[in-house]
Image (cartoon, rainbow, N blue to C red):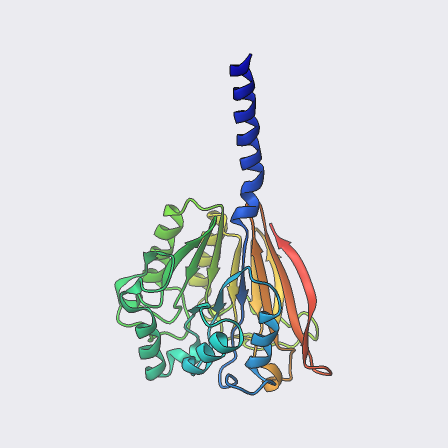
Length: 298
């Protein structure tokens, strides 16, 4: 009888552990980019977004910035001073970093050897291993792409997914066994208007300049069950599911530095079963950030 009681207690303990597991796996991170030239101590610019992020909660593990982030020293300064001094930052190459040699040197040195940043599991192609890589946190696989790399250099295209990046990405997607996968680049596959005011930017000079490469890139993400492709470039915020893939444009986080669309950052929360997002946009009247959109990427 005593043996049966012990077995029953063990089964109850195992069931309880399985039920608690999703809570232990839950974590949050921030998407904020396109703040170039508007970082520093001015609260009306990127600093204001950082201070709003600091007020959220302590579950935020890291920040990803999908490009156009120069000067990077100023952005990193803002993140460390106004969010948290140990906050992890994953910068993504944008077209403005690509066209500025000293920016590319900074980004290479920020991730020397392609594996200096936390949680990296796979370095990119040799030519761009510091700026293309993947990392795992919890049950989620993150892929950072430098869309300006080709076989000869890491800063020599106008935004594309040539063979060297496509082949590496395909291999990386085949290797991961994580439940969720998020791919982050700078340029949209399909430029979309801002969800609030319908402003359009970069309609014809994004990945759609190379439609064949764009199409096979999107198809690859869909075929491997990628949850979302996250990007910037347009300064407009949008979230839309096209066929089987979510496309998330993070907008800009430069405060009043671009009045054509509201300054934006996105909080993403991951647990065992789903990825939730909350979008915060600047209320220029009060200079506070308010939730304007939320949903589940599924």
